[in-house]
Amino acid sequence: MQGEKGYLHLEGKVEDVMTREPVVVHENDSLGRLIHMFKTYNFHGFPVVDEERRLVGIVRDTDVISIFARRDPAFFVYEKVKDIMLTPPLVIDGVETVQKAIMRMFTDQTRFLVVVDKHKRIIGVVTSFDLIKGIHLEDPSSG
Image (cartoon, rainbow, N blue to C red; front, side, top):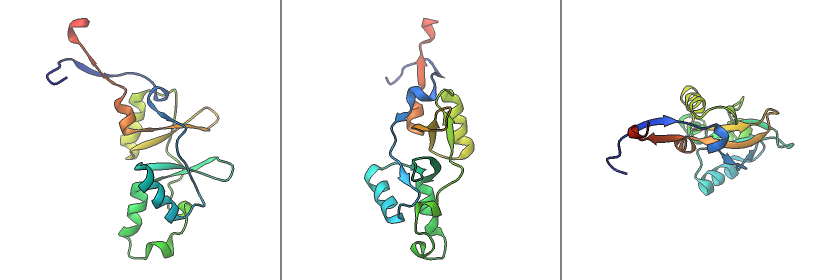
């Protein structure tokens, strides 16, 4: 692989590279449970759902870390996921291109997006690492 020459290009749709059946957290989960989820899964964030499993927000590792940048004791001010989650959730349609997902992540300054279908139901998540699957090396001599 080292020394390979060619042209990098993007191809594919978000649904081609996304992670299906993502782990979610509930808006009424405690911050203690959320911290446990981050430690267990090593993810950068989770979709947040309500009691009917509807997408209501996202919570990212940076949202958790930022509560300790304030002077107030974190667990006295913030008790539940809904207290720190980002709304509206950062979403993308599964039929969008990998390029569009990359642009959204840079624009929204996030490492993941929730992938939804036309009815706004969660069908997956796409992370910055997932998007690397859409980068391909084209051999210049094959053209």
